Image (cartoon, rainbow, N blue to C red; front, side):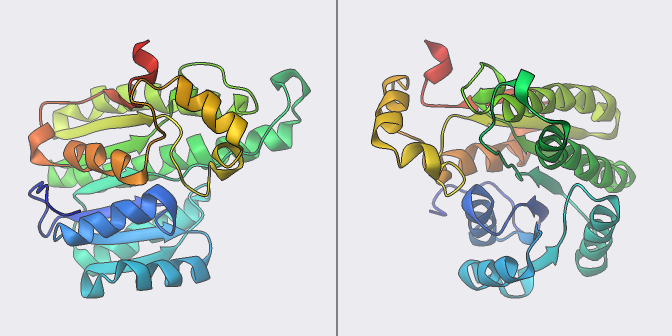
Length: 254
């Protein structure tokens, strides 16, 4: 796209999970907008492939990192500061789900794995970013939640609980960091057509059932989520904090 401008030229962004799906589209659009971007993901080969797709030149770096590991998160932000000298916005995009049985039948290891990536990683990255932003007295943190965090969804119980916690984390951080001129918000998409959700939308029966719940009559595309995120990361959203905006085609309005 690039036709909608957000005033992000030379702003420095960290995008977690930037090697594919929504994260990749966020990074691509930020480069178009003139921002400087650091993407992270666990697999170096996926990051290298993403770098070629994004084609960001000197404005793009890729840092291998498992966001649920403190040492990886610390290295991520040290690398960003060494390269770009500041940090204007963190986009907590990483998310993962493993189709799960009922909560009562879930083992602890599976619970921990899903929580580590979705919730604990978001916490650690937000904590790392806020340390930098407090010194700057300015910054934006935007997290990707889900409408699965607002209503129970089959096979997504742990994921939904983690996303619900991210919405509360957003409120708490917004309250605590407001004194430093840091705004913290989130978006809550409905199902988005990415590889992450392909096991659901590639099934025609599930696809049609989901679409019936969406007044706009279709599934979200990645860019439907990207632009609300960029708005929240821009100066236009300086008086918005502690909010989670549904990006769901009206699904939670009915």
